[in-house]
Image 1 (cartoon, rainbow, N blue to C red):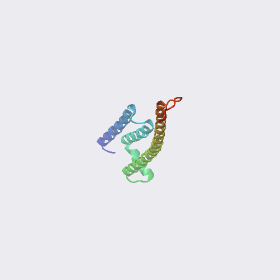
Image 2 (image 1 turned 60 degrees about the vertical axis):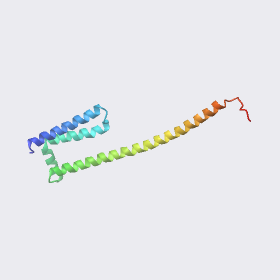
Image 3 (image 1 turned 90 degrees about the vertical axis):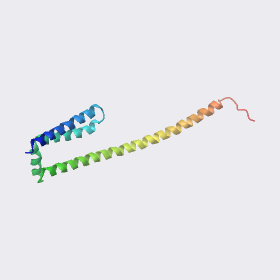
Length: 133
């Protein structure tokens, strides 16, 4: 059984993480699809803080001698998954950004062309002949 101070500290950290996630959601600084993973991680931390024997029993079940090693392994897997998801999102955003830049460039060309046409029709309205020297 871990010391009471460690359990209390772990519970406070888990609850603070939950509060932070919900506050970021409320302020629209965090999207719902990302908040789900952080809420799950915070709840898992809370459960493991309140019931540390779960981590010990799970470590025994999978054949890991030290429960903290299981915790570190799980943390690495979570970080890998989050990193992979964010890398995917960055790739999609890069594609979208490139496509939008191309569209803006095409619109600028079209606008320049229309402005040139308008300038030339204002200088020489249709139906009027331009005197030649």
